[in-house]
Length: 457
Image 1 (cartoon, rainbow, N blue to C red):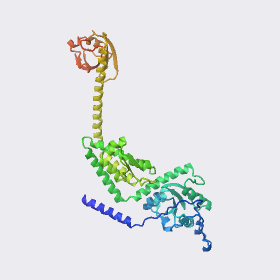
Image 2 (image 1 turned 90 degrees about the vertical axis):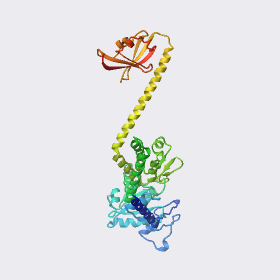
Image 3 (image 1 turned 30 degrees about the vertical axis):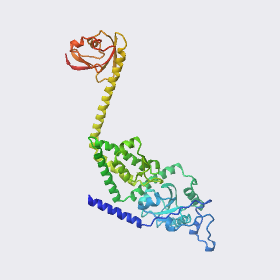
Image 4 (image 1 turned 180 degrees about the vertical axis):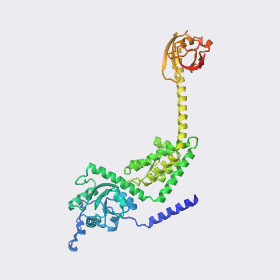
């Protein structure tokens, strides 16, 4: 175990060193100038003008360096280049053998350069990145997708018919509040939503290395086992199962809603979270291992302020919890039954105590009334229905036996129980059965449970 931990730490150190050596991706951030034209200067890539006639359009941003805004995309870099891009993205799916692609791609590159960092181009070679073109359901080349904040908003196929079409597409993608012209249909919106989900899952999975996945799985499994040990007792596994399922639900909310920031904040003072997560340190450690960090005194958050979250660690964490639950399912089920039985015993005891108090109060109030009439509230053991039987103070239990509202076989023993009077009388006890209700202190009302089947008299 120590050797494995040492190797894991060395791998993490190497990855960190490699990340420091990798040149940081540059993005020039500028405000959209008034009357911004996304095609300004783009035509120069197709038909260069003589230098003396090339002028920078008034109000246009300073052109960016090509290497800062034009990238060759791979599955491993989708998360960084496209999903988490701080600016809108043109996702250009092309092939080296495609003639129209060779015409369109240079123009898109020039557009992104002239946009001064407000737009980036990510080129996808479909022959080399079939996973990406498959996830995007590309059927013809070239196909260009407009992506913003990790979501696909629109697309077009083939060469644009004119500059106006490209201008309308870019304005809808880049300018806040500007709609696409023509508008995106509701059917296409649903299709783009589905494609965005597929692209997001592909990007997240490819960005999370196998070694990182394995380390996270081992860590979460270890913490779940620690949770059981921390809780202890005969039902520790069942209690830990409740906490694990709450954690799983929190992860599933983020996986299913990666663009919704509200699901990325966990309130530790929430009644359920406080009882099943916040009070257990292993649960808090699991949240930290998948990216959560303290957010104030009573909350934790992940990817705060970001438009979209990388769902990879949450997918791994959820899968790890599912495996842990499945591996321990028999013990969880057995301890769950113990918990339910114990809860039922407690409930019945409380119910019996409450009933005795109610009966005592009822009978104390009734004793204050001077009357020879008596009401026996009779219930057959195991049944809920209560029968009110009106009797006289001088009536005996033998007379009550004759008036039972349920069948009794000849010679069958009947037992009368009054919890409030601590009275238990069997029909075979002639001396007690002969006493009046007044003598037995059952006046003016009493609750009695009758039990039939104690054997033949």
